[in-house]
Image 1 (tube, rainbow, N blue to C red):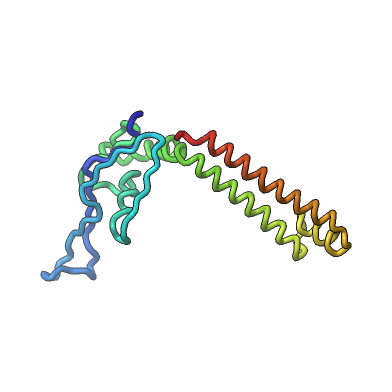
Image 2: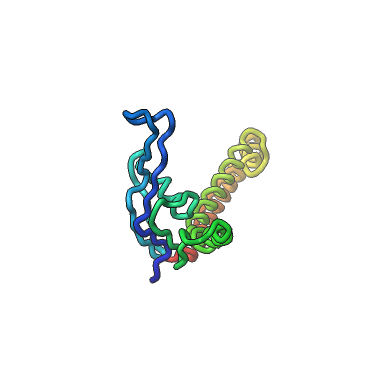
Length: 180
């Protein structure tokens, strides 16, 4: 497999805030990202962990060049983004987001939408209990108030089948879209 994201000795430092001054009364530079190199192949999943202020967010901003590194190279799909001009970067960035990052996150997005659909179904059922309509309202009006237990049981079974079906379809689709 080829490397999808490559960082070669990337560094980033910032001029400290005017309120934070050294002993000499002048603002100083502080290093947010020490020389960092990494290589991520297509299909791999990485996580950044560290203390608050350790430079995790800055490193992510360096990968998509929302921040330009002080030194080093950022290479995505064999294109050195640090060598591109600002206008060329504007053209390359949507490609990077759509073709690389969005493509790799498809299965996770499908799972998130699956959870969202199940949550909406549960909220609609709960809203029905207070007169908001939907299956919950049907269960309360016809099942509970009219003492028709079979209607309530049927709607609970329907809701359960819907939840299981949505989850099974979401899991199947996410598995199909996952490249690992």
